[in-house]
Image 1 (cartoon, rainbow, N blue to C red):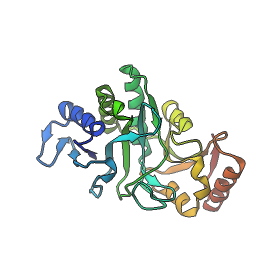
Image 2 (image 1 turned 135 degrees about the vertical axis):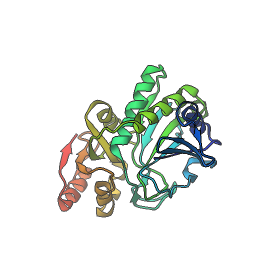
Image 3 (image 1 turned 120 degrees about the horizontal axis):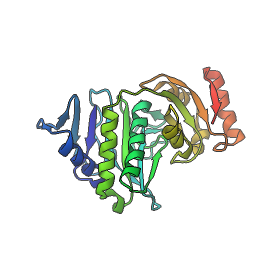
Image 4 (image 1 turned 90 degrees about the vertical axis):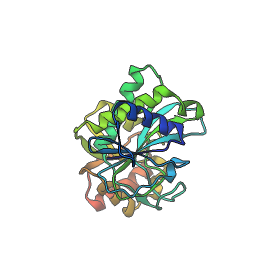
Length: 258
């Protein structure tokens, strides 16, 4: 895997420093190595500006999470655009998700949050923002303001969660998940409590934009076979369910109310 960070961004550089001090000790001149994994300093000013066309099985971006509201959080998600590309990437284009790896990061963030008594929120987020790339990719983020970005305990938790993922070969059933808001509360709970993994996550506010082009990507752009669709019972209305059910029927996919 390629782990990307920027030394110019504290929420990115601090977790990377923990990784370098404890695991990625081999300095190649290009970056730092741990086994077959490579940690690279992109030195970008913003984490949406990262280079991304690497020959690798997965890209992990150590990143800042931004929110207008004060919301101390540790997050993981796959980037991608359900409709317009307002924050980079290609419109109506998803990336390839590796759901089992994201689940391991989520479990690690939750474990570390409790272990170190940080008391923040831990969330899976829906697919959003760029870039668009060919390799499976995920963002692991510290948010949501400057106060949280420089928190060294949060940096340690992120580093340990990433190491948990790198050293795990666990595999879980992957699902295309639909409904709820940006922080995907229900599918976060599923990832923490069940032996299933959320892959692409479509929030309720983007369901009206869903067509067969993005539906097919959500089912097929995955490092693991997508087993089916989970749709929130309470996190969607009847009209939204009808849109999903019509596309699922046309595609030939099974839907489970969640």
